[in-house]
Image 1 (cartoon, rainbow, N blue to C red):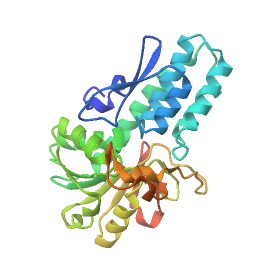
Image 2: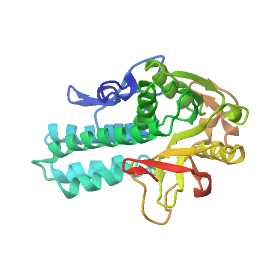
Image 3: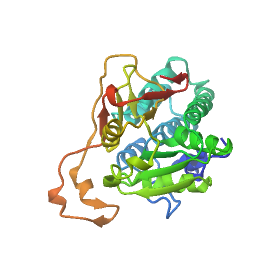
Length: 309
């Protein structure tokens, strides 16, 4: 994991310093590499809702905060209460909640810190497994379209493909309104020496004849191949179906149940600006569902740590 770009290194996602949690502020990346300080669990929850970090970032920040609780001498009930509050910050992606539930089933106050470290190691290995499977789908000199920030697995897949001499090229849709594709994915790939370029979200159709596949993360997925991911993913998947291009989603743990989820709706005001730049009147912003639901018929395969489904 030492080859990962700045944004995905453990210490830059979240770390404990001077009895506080510091989260890497992805809202300012790549122009600034600064951190947001969280003293209380309410600070962390507010910052997760404010998109200081996203994707896999809340999982790592949440686990680090539990370690901070331990460092402060909190009892197990207080730590469990904080975990429940943290898990509620972003309700659509339930990986955090499931990880916490599993963690407390096997932990007491004495071995909690050790088990948290095991969770970090576990996820590092799972990311690498998915990246390895993902790289097997990439052939020499192929071009990949992606949306948002697909975190470790996609980055590792591209890195492994590069190390295998395949010379992958990546096109990143900018992913409004937070521009994760432009600000997070593209600079991270460039840092690793992978050829990458950025397009506007509404250029995806125009570039479909120039790509070989569409790859994204899955904030949540199900065994029937239904995928939930950042808004804009559905558009790409529909275009892939029309242009006969495969769509692959990375998912660390598909749910083996009937698709059930809570859709996160964010303020429509977020759609009326990019960063601090206002693009229209705040009153004109409509409802903003943060995620798309991509039906199984649009999904070619889901890339998991256990294989390609």
